[in-house]
Length: 161
Image 1: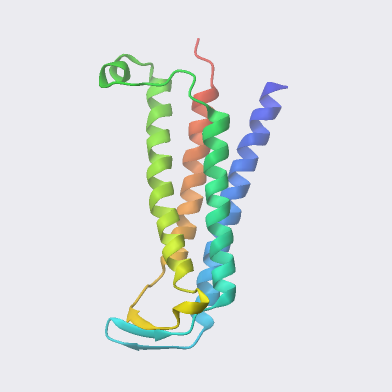
Image 2: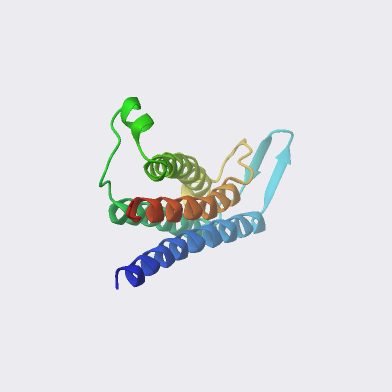
């Protein structure tokens, strides 16, 4: 029964990250459909309400996947110092590495999605520096986040013995 629950959690995390990635990529497509005028590094464009909604959904799914992976993966044997890390088993070291990578990917991916989403807010019809591909890069990072979250969950819940 425990294995079935673990498989369900992994599928849920991957599903949320895939949904976030797809929404991020679709938001980029919608954003590119709007009129824009570009002059060197400056760009004037109309915001896309559809891209705003899709980007917001992508950010929400990415955050939810991260929260679920961290809550359900738990921290049964947390490593608090460099000495603990060196003495830890390879599985615990892998768990900590995956945990660190999930946080880094979350920070970068969520930032990209938020910046891309906010550039499509209704009140943002303006000219400025180009914001190229923030939504699509954030969407791609959602897929990478899913891989590291599942690796974290599996290594964190694996029994050593």
